[in-house]
Amino acid sequence: SQTIHQWPATLVQPVGSPLSLECTVEGTSNPNLYWYRQAAGRGLQLLFYSVGIGQISSEVPQNLSASRPQDRQFILSSKKLLLSDSGFYLCAWSATGSNEKLFFGSGTQLSVL
Amino acid sequence: GQSLEQPSEVTAVEGAIVQINCTYQTSGFYGLSWYQQHDGGAPTFLSYNALDGLEETGRFSSFLSRSDSYGYLLLQELQMKDSASYFCAVRAPDSNYQLIWGAGTKLIIKP
Image 1 (cartoon, each protein chain N blue to C red):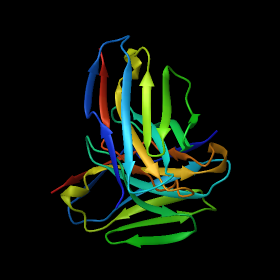
Image 2 (cartoon, helix red, strand yellow):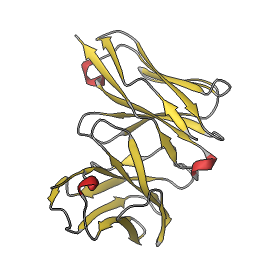
Image 3 (cartoon, rainbow over the protein chains, first blue to last red):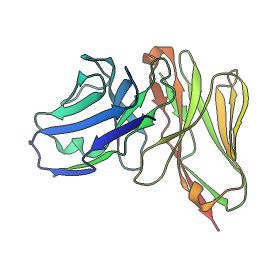
Image 4 (cartoon, rainbow over the protein chains, first blue to last red):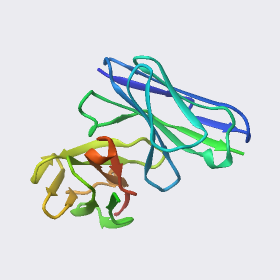
């Protein structure tokens, strides 16, 4: 069966510090991968998605970046965090051609202070 | 522009039936998905409608009317564990086929 791992669960970082969130998927090949952000009590904002290794599409211009160094690994990074980067970050995967059905990781609650 | 509208909050009684509506405005449409998210948790997929009509999965059903740009999620025999936020999301060609999300409906269930 397929599983998705996302870590850490919570993170408190000072303004201006770097960020690296990692997500890995098991039990499937060539998944579509996604990074979402959710503000408290709000909907989901798509940040990045990837249909293959090294292929990253950015939906929202910001100081975040994403990379996909391996087929089932997706990394969200920032060189210098802003206060506005605080939020709940969710990694997700879907099967190729089936992106109406996303499977989410457990999320990372990021607080930038 | 592209937008989805759903009520911000719905209250119902345990054991009752509740309907959560979603209207969408997109340039093109492939289908409507529904997700459930408990507080502090991740969204989980509930259903997907690409064609008009009702899809039933246990206590949950989802309906779509493409001509009305409208869908709803129907929850029957409500249980306390159904207290969560419910999101509708549209898959459309003008969003590079990625999901466009509604802001979510918080379902409050009273005993």
